Length: 400
Figure 1 (tube, rainbow, N blue to C red):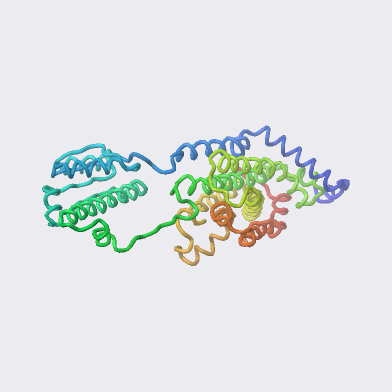
Figure 2: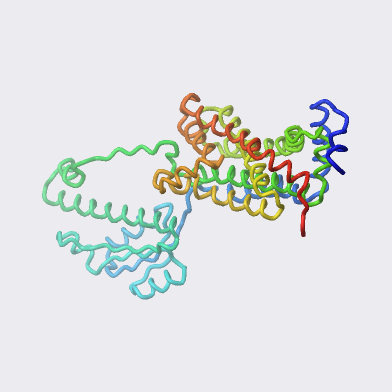
């Protein structure tokens, strides 16, 4: 079919063309299980997996080994106090450091707490005994949590010994505490005072998965038209207008992904009662803009690389990099300046900043308008590659 025949298609109303293409796209979605998996099954599995994985907020009862070389009532009391910590569980008590070391190497415990011989007597006599603790840094979260607990119990043990010694010498408790803790620190954790990992991670991991699925489905939808040589039929239904054709094609995707995104919000802020200090409207608006911005990026990808395989590969790569570069796992300000600039190329980065300002900190909407504007700015991307994409749709021949 040549261009003259394509251009001779009767002119129809834009709305009618878009609705016709949308109906055609719904049929394509229903016929392909890949769409069903990427749009519904994968997001639901991720919600159930991540929310159940971190339902307690923090890992609890992390096993450690205690090497008690003292065996006194003081050391046993110290071990009981350490075991009472929520994140720590004394899984084994031994007098052999080699046995504890083997247990750590075999992955049975994540840390070792070492109480030296004559600990109680030396502490009472003021001979400064040393409490030692070891953590397996291979397991970053487990090691950091256990390090915090073991360091805390060591400081408390020192304070307890100091208090008992001072009382024996006739000092008052106020006088002793002034020496043990001359400066009192008043700490306030803002945004996530519970230090809940689920609040910290799931509010960005789940939208990140959604962004990845949108990239893939958008590239898949347009790339499959090129692969199976149905692009001219698609364009003809849109009156040979790429804009009309794209809007009609993306409309069902937008509706489905928006519903999925809103269900994410219900799961996070409704059922799990995560912080939502600015109300529902700012976050629902951000989720909708994340959906359409991600679709725009997907169209841009297939427009730059108008082949099925390269388009999907670029979508996977770009979507996976987003988890590392948007700032929720490693702060953007700590990255190289080049990476700081590149982080702005990901819609998830701007959604994350909106989430921090609106859901966690409850700031006025005025302070986040630039991030909303940047999400809307991604809608310009399809226009930048419009000519290249249309040429690919009209003339590209797929070679298996």
